[in-house]
Length: 121
Length: 86
Image 1 (cartoon, rainbow over the protein chains, first blue to last red):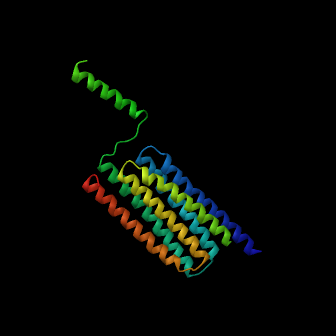
Image 2: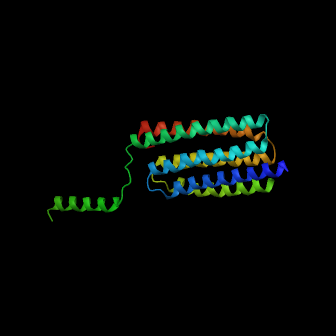
Image 3: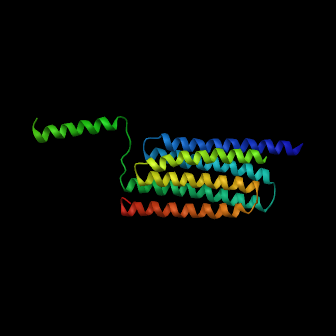
């Protein structure tokens, strides 16, 4: 009886974890600029992988491998945060421009204005 | 339980190929670095799921892989930061 309960809990944790990993992937595809993509990637990464790890730990029970899983979970937690910070700082330092609403139209308008000024059209 | 693990790893594998699209299309180097980091984490989870089906020694491989991917991405980010465009 206990086996059935623990297996169902493991299935629940794993499916929710994989769902959140997919949320991160869709987020990295859909968002317009790198700063919003960072939100999606690092946050959902940690949550999804963390849930999967907890599910595996429950499936594993008390053993040495469960400790290894805990070590991987802790490492993943800290590494994703540092990766997010490093990429965001690099993007900010190489002054990647922020995306705002109708950016392309504004750029076109500026080019037109510049063209008019230069050629006095 | 084994078919469930295989199913989950297949789903994640599809996710890795979808993330590859961002790595391919990403306008800037840092988008590609971000996509690689996401792919690394997904591969890590796939590795552990597969490890639970066959041999449990894959956990050490996953641990080493997590460390390596973390270090390499931070190094690339710092390099891009100091040298400007790659």
